[in-house]
Image (cartoon, rainbow, N blue to C red; front, side, top):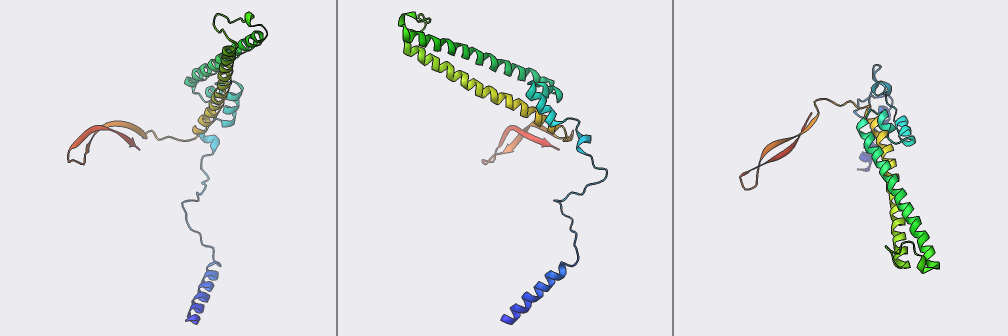
Length: 193
C-alpha cells in the first residue's frame, strides 16, 4: 500500500513539473486586456478632481462652479455664512459675559447685565453655555467646510463614468399576493436597465 501511494505521489509530482514547462494562458475575467483604442481618463472626463478640491478649499463653492453644479453654490455659501455669523455672535456674547463675570467678581454692584442675570453664578453658567455653543459651531462648521471640499472632489471623479440613459428608478403601482390568499395594492420601486 505504501509503495502504491509513493508511485501516485511521484507521478503526480512529475505531472506538475511537466505542466510547468509550457506556459498556459487562461482567459480570466479578472484581467482586462487593454485595447489600443481604449479611452483614457482625459478623454472621458475633462474635470480634474484635485483642482476641484483645491478650488473648493481656497474659496468655498468654487469647486462646485468648476464641476458646473451651480445649484450647489448657494447652499455652500449659505452654510459658510451661517456658520460664520453664529460663531461670531456666540464669541461676542461669550466675551461679554466673561468680562461681566470678572467685573462682578470684584464688585457685585457693577454687573452690566443686572436686568437679565442677577448672580455671578448665573453669569458663569451663561458664559459656559455660549462658549460651548461657539466651540460646537466651530467643529460642525469645519466638518461642513471639509464636506463641501469632498463633494467637489467626488463630483469631479463621478464625471468620468458613463451613465446609460435607459437606467431609471421609478415608482409604479403594484398588486401583491398576501399569505391569506388575497391581494394587496401598493407601490413598488422598479429599477430599469
